[in-house]
Structure formats: C-alpha cells, structure tokens
Amino acid sequence: MQILDLHDPTAGLALPPVQPLLITGANGTLGRAFQRLCAVRGIDFVALSRDELNIADPLSVEKALSQHNPWAVVNTAGYVRVDEAEQDFKRCYRENTTGPTVLAAACAYRDIHFLTFSSDLVFDGNKSVAYVESDTPCPLNVYGNSKRLAERDVLLHMPQALVVRTSAFFSPWDEYNFVYSALRAAHGKQQFEAADDVLISPTYVPDLVNVALDLLIDEERGVWHLANQGAYTWADLARLVADMASLDTSFVVPRSMQAFGLAAARPLYSVLGSKQGNLLPSAEERLHTCVSQMMPAITASSEEHMAVAS
Image (cartoon, rainbow, N blue to C red; front, side):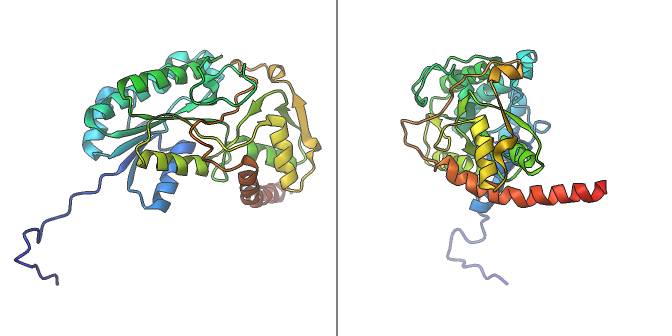
C-alpha cells in the first residue's frame, strides 16, 4: 500500500499524460518503420491509417490533434504510384500536396513540431554532381511536382517545419523494394530487367527513420537531404546485391529507362548530397546488412514454393 506524504502538496496528484508522437500513414513502409523504431527507442506514439485520419480534411486533422494532443506529427502518408499519378493527378495532389499543407497549418496553429517527406523526383536530372538542399526543384512528372508544391506550401504555412527529401528505399522489413526483388530474381535464376542509364541514391529505411527522428527531436527545420552515400544505376545495384549474396550476376538484363515505356518521365540523375553534412553511412555498408537479413527469408520462401510444387 502506498502511503501519501501529507506535507507534499503534489501527493496524490496524477502525472500529466505523456504527449505522443502522431504518425500518419500507419500502414505504409515509412509509417511501419517509424512505429518499429519508436518502440525500440521508447518514444510514445499514436499511428493512424488513412481510414482513421484524412490528412487533406482540416476537420479530420483537427479532430486527431485534439484527441491525441501530440508533441509532434510525422507525416508518412501520401500517394506513391509515380506512373499512375500522370492520370490520377487529382488524388496525387490531394494526398501529396494538400494533405501535408493542411497538417502544417494545423501544427503551426497549435505549436506542434512537424516532419514530412519529399523526394529526389523534384529534380530534373540535369546536374552531374549530387543535388543539395539549395538546388532549385524542377520536376519532370506529376508526382515530383506534387512534392515540389508540398515543400513550398508546407514551409509557407510553417517555416519551422522539417521537410526531408529522400530516395529509393531498401529495407529488410518488407518485400516491397528493389533490393528484395533483385535478390529474389537472382536466387531463382530469373532474368531481371533494370535501367542502366539512371543514377540514384539508395536509402536504407532504418537509417532514414532514426536520423529523421533525431532531427525532429533537435527541432531542426527547413529542407534536409537524407540518403545513404553512393550513386548507382538500378542495374549496378541489382548486380551488387546479388554479388554480396554470392549469386550469379548475369541474371541482370540492362535496359535504358526509356525502354520500359513508363508513363512518368524520370530524371537520369537524382543523386542526393547535402550541405548539412552526410548523416547516413555508405549505401554499400547498409546493403551488406540488408542482404544478410533478406537472404534467409528468400531461401525459405523458395524452398517452400518448391515443396508445394512437388
């Protein structure tokens, strides 16, 4: 039994509730990664799916902020289908431009910290050295333009917001990334077409989330570039991860980006550097880590498939 100290004026008073971090886009790659690493780091959070929070609806946003009273909002929601956005542009702009802007305005009004994500696709690829934060966006497609406008409007409504540009995710935590697809094809000795005329910066999702959280906690603001160091074509990246897994690299079929006939134009160069300092380690180091964690699952899945087939 707890004995109260009657001389302590605070005795018996309940502690104020801990303010959580509010994460939008709970079911996406970034949303799940933030939940996972917040749990590891002991950061209280509330994660809401698009069914629970419509970020483009001011009333829905106001309701969520009133109910959960977060100290910060991390926006990982958005439209991610780059090629479909060329036709489905209204939805793309609603989710990628209007949504973050509504969140920024609401967070500014309530003095809540805000983090949202942008993309290397805000650039046109006409540089030959890494893009830095001060380079002028000039997107080639609807998706990139939706992110460009979001950057502009978020910082207009909330100059103290944190906007992180990033690129080409890979992670051992889900199968929905290029590295996993390449390894699965290499393991199955299946031909794998990949662009050999496009240079990108692969980004290891756990690094991205950890550093983004650090920047948010440190109350950094403005545009930051977060990508692992290194520049690769998609074809080179596929060969590299196969080689790391001691698999034959001849499965890669190099193609030009134009040969894929994609609806949305891509920049041929979108490597991200930073004036703020390269905060993430080399991509090659993280690819080793990722490959070693992915291969057991890929091998097991292949063996299970063979067992079912027989």
